[in-house]
Structures are given as C-alpha cells and as structure tokens.
Image (cartoon, rainbow, N blue to C red; front, side):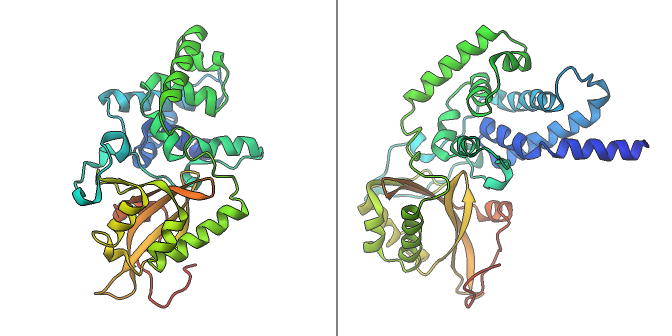
Length: 334
C-alpha cells in the first residue's frame, strides 16, 4: 500500500467518527463552533500521532481520549455557557431593554445532523436527542469539566466505568464518585427535564401544535399564539440577556419592541433534538425576506413551554445550511 493510499484510508477511518465526536465536544463545551474546532484539532492530533498509536485500545477510544483532553484544555478558562434565565431574573415588559452580552456567554444551538449519528436502536437515538436539548445542555454546563466528561461518557454514551477510568487516567472509584456528584448536581438543576415531553418522533398532537404555531406566528395572531403557550412560557433572545415569562409579557413584547417580526416566514429545522424554525423577516429594501432568528421550541403537555430566538443570523443560518434570502412569492425553498 502506498503512503498516499494509507493516508486516504486513515482519513476515511477518522471521518467516520466526526459526528459522534462533535456531539461529545458540543456537550462538553456548549458551543457549536468551539465543538467543531475541537474536533478538527482532535483529527489533526490523531493524524499527526497515528504512528505512535499502538492499537492498545480501539481507534474510537483513542479519539475520545484526544477529544477529552482538547475539551478540558479549552475549559481551563472556566467559562460556563448559559441561557438568559440562568443569569438573570425575568424582566417585566415595562422594563424590557435589549442588552447584549458577548458570544462566549451563551449556550449555542446546533443542527441535529452535525451531532447525532444515525442509530439503529430507537432507545439509543432517543437518549442522544435528549442529551443535546437546551435544558439538559444548560444543566451540563454547571458541572466541573471532569464531572461533565464522566457523566456524558457514562450516562449518554454508555461507556463502562473501567473504560472511562482508563480514558481519564484515574480509578474506577474516582469515576463512580464523580458520576454520583454530577447526578446530584443535575437533580438540583431546575428545568433539566423541562422539555422531556417532546416525543421522538413528534406525535400527531405535537405536529398539529407546530402547524398551529406556524400559522399563528406568520399571521402574527397574538390570540392564537396565546392559546398555544403555557401561561408560564419562557421566551429568550440571545445575545440579549432579556428573557420574558408569561403570555402577557411575551405577546406584549411581540407587538411593541418585536413588532417588526410581523409578516415573517418560517422554515422548519432540526435543532438540539427539538423542533425549530428559521425565521425570515420582511425585507422592505430588497423585497422578499431576510434572515432574522433561529427559533428553538420546547413542548410539554400539549403546549409550548419555551421558544428561544438565536438572533446572530450571520452565524446560525450558514451553520444550518439555510438560504440567506427568501423570495416573496416562494412558498417553499427546496
């Protein structure tokens, strides 16, 4: 086998693990872009040091060891990504102000296709989806980095304690202790399972709820929207730290500070194991519709409990492969 063929073969073998590694790094870091950077760093390190890999573990385990070290190095700064409701109290509509915080503050959205490998086992696929949902991701960010790694490897990826101990160069007892502490922290995290009622795939009732949501939002019908929301529903808008709670404040905001969203168009997306939409606002200058927000919806008991608007469209729309303009007459974008 020539060196070129060997290199190509290694590249193919490494690429087979990219999606699952991206999912792991995303859960560790809470950032879609940092996760992809971490995986790329992992691949480069693996490629450069492959001759030293003696096959004492599987290639997959070796890659996870490298990825873990990369993530732990990136987390030494101690930054914990969060949602607006993790940082401040909700703001009454009368006091609403749009105050942005740096990108590094926020838990970031991620396309399902980039972090959820195809799984033949429905139960395994369901666990994977649940473990990238926003509430669970936010709870993960509260854990110290090594506890976070242990919990993800043990609870999400179903590694044995002995395998995790080997990866982290520690003892099984230490792994079990870290897992126990991580579970206790997650149990104390309010809302860690708040969106667990989203079924996989969405059931008929949830599909109809989303259809009604699209009709209400595109029609900017506040009465119809109110009927779809839990009375204590939450609305967030990163990079702004403002968040609203309750239908009166949410619909009040949408008809005042958010009034420019009237007439928007929505395209469905799969994001963080949850239903979501790419929102396009009318573009009075160029005509048609321009990107405005990536929406992520949380559902429980037949109503929307949360909808989260990620507003940095220059980052999110390319990440999701979304068009940067919609024509006014287009009903669907292929």
